[in-house]
Amino acid sequence: MSFSFEVKESDLLGRIGTLKVGGKALETPYMFPVIHPVSQIVPTRELASMGFGGLMTNSYIIHSRRKQEALDRGIHRLLDFDGVFMTDSGGYQVLEYGDLELGYDQVARFQSAIGSDLAVTLDRPTGYPQTRANALDTVEYSLKNAKATLKEFGEKRTVWVGPVQGGVYADLVRMSAKSMVGAGFEVLALGSPVQVMENYMFAELVKMIVAAKRAIPHSVPLHLFGAGHPLTMSLAVALGCDTFDSASYVIFARSGRFMSRGGVMTLKSMKYLPCSCAVCAKTSVKELMELGHDERTKRLSIHNLYVLREELEACKEAISEGRLWDLVEERSMAHPRLREAFSEMSKHSRELGPGTPALKERGLFVRSREDLERPELASAGARLAGSVRRSSKTAVLAAGNVSGQRSAKGADVYIHHPLLGPYPAELDFVYPFSQTEAWLPEQASSIEDSKKKLKALGYSKVKVVHDRRARSRNVRSRRTRSGASPSPPSSSARSR
Image (cartoon, one colour):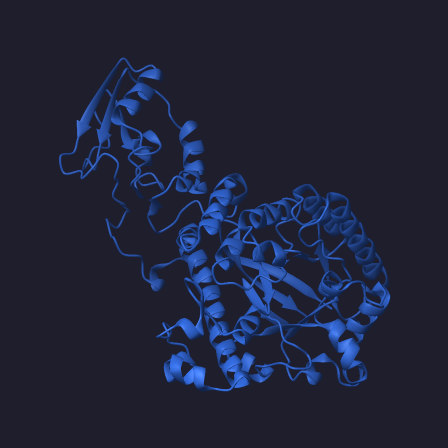
């Protein structure tokens, strides 16, 4: 089966792209809702009408309970869905219940026979907690099955997904990902995040994803198993996860949990529905509580899916506008462990830099210590280090928004940046030198610091020109060629 992945826009490691499987296409980032092949609470047709063009289900459950019917009709007719079907091998059942009574070849042959578009080879999830020796065993077992599957069934009508294992052992994750790429897989999937996330180990999740991405070429999309939570989605997207799958929407609904942009709430403790989706706009907490369990579960499941879809669209828009970092930071305020994960992400600015556009139409916000590690600032600092050349003995340092101060007779002109220090006036319209808004008094570079840097370059005299209208030496207003504007550009003005 033909497969391709084309990246259209990117920010950090997040990317908007087109994933094509056969004649079907999905726009990434994308979340596959996981459906139960026997007792699905939300009909697949309704999922399709909500805009979900791809679903995921478990081939082991189908093999156990609807095997012959699936072989006769194929998975798309069996489950009444003509979009992209991704099937799991049953590896998660191994983690939960022990070994399956099926070999890699039986699992692969069945997935191919029922017409799975994307199929995961039989793996052994690492899980958590786990010893290093056991984690290594899961890596080797999964790789052995993956290679054998690709060799025997690689020319069939299914695109095979290579499962990356290793758990919280970053070196094993990287080794697993590198081996899967070397084996020839066009799509990889990072396993074992569910138990890590259930234990609120979000910083460990960051390390796992970073370790995998370090071994994966830009052309290979990465799937993240079981990552369907509105608060962690932007984080995973920013780190380079292109697709996800999750059954959280229905698992949460069964226990009466209500997803929201700020987290998950319990329906019975709520008074209002802070949502305007197709479900919430037509009902109330009281009416939902009065429903039978199955109907309430269905409606909450649909609501949760709308929340997840909305968050996915927010991630795409943030990528398009160049503000994915800001979105991750905003979401991180919901929980201290998420804030810890955001802090961990900020340590990997070098990995995040290549996908970050050199030019953006939005101002750069610096409002936390972590923001000092933004790849835009790191890139600007690197450019600045190689662009300063002294051509006279005198330097003019413009402090604040000094209108028209671009040149001075017999002197080199610099402008003070609150974080980067002095930069040549010629760079004033180069992003993000004059497009930074910062409020970090304890971290800001002072005028005296900038003067010292200039004198270290060999200037015998540094003249400071102040702007009395400047609100603070720690605050820079955003300027562009079209002038200052506190509002974002319109969608029609953005370059696609």
